[in-house]
Image (cartoon, rainbow, N blue to C red; front, top):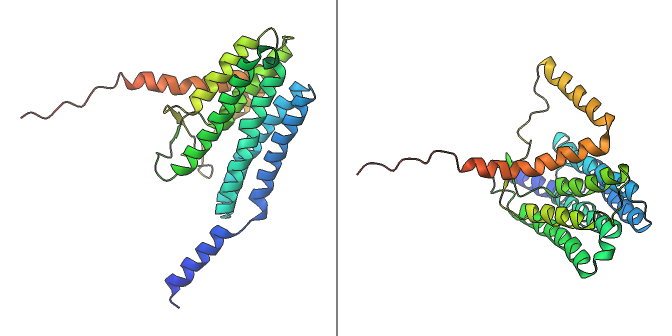
Length: 252
């Protein structure tokens, strides 16, 4: 057996393997999404919103841990997608329905289903296009960011003593907007080009510290504004693309 054949068999075995460390983070994210669903059904909407944000953090860690420890696998990728569907598709939809959509009748569950179906379609498209699209950008709003936008809206409105009944139509508009943004062809910066192992100037660490201080002052408001701004960034990039000068056609 040649060395190349042995290496190929080792890589195939690695892809089929199940690694503990990254999948622990995925399982924790899945639990946070399930917890958010249960708390939303028990009318503890703030707990549900916070749980979705926790799931988002854990989801961001599992992939990075897998790459840093060289424990990527096909099982991990599929498991991560199923976890994302629960945490960033089902959980935000149920949270919004329980908090604001119950009095909207069919329009309420229709708006919630648009978000849920859009998350499923977004994840399916991401899995099929993972080796095709530019790694620097996402095609459509990522489902964790869409979930954070919806959960952040609920959290900040609860913090300001608003009820879901008062904001039901605004909540429906935002939920549908987030869902359609997920299945759009808009470009969103992925931040995957940032090298965590590369040395950075001192000012970068200082700015990160300022960011965490700013968020800690009013977490619901600043997190919602952060993800709302990220959601709008795709539309801004789309509008700016029209300003790019067209390549002149060659002279005959």
